[in-house]
Image (cartoon, rainbow, N blue to C red; front, side):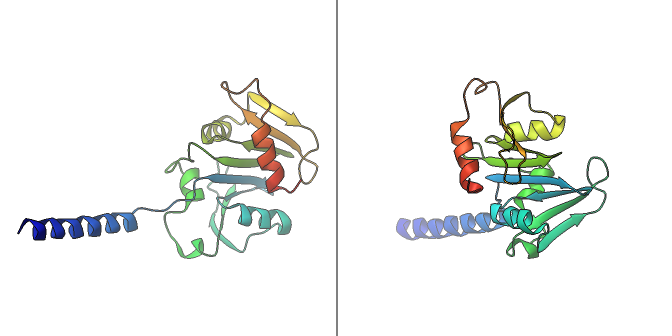
Length: 177
């Protein structure tokens, strides 16, 4: 009798966990890319889509919010083919909207603005940069970007006195430098 009850509870527990897992959005929050260009703000949560945008100047799939930027800019979220049918659970959208946070360990982000390419290893630093528009701690490489941009590796109080070797290596790998 107890074995049957235990079995039923186990099956019920597994079913409830599976339903909960299906109900939870599976965000891509390990990276974030933002480009300000021609009065629009483009946002990506996928490097491949971001890289394609950098090569072509457009993205095949997008979610657009006209006039929704902080200064009335149009916001364009670059989507993957898989994301294009989704109406919620999109990492880039939810990070931009403040509904999701980037991961604590292993985060990578880039913001391209006014001819500079800002590179981040922590979501909190990127979020602060977007709110303030400035990076108080940084390591700068002039003309080192893929299109000759100045690259600013954003630091914080805890790592401000160290050269961001790992972040530079990750940037180099992504941009094949």
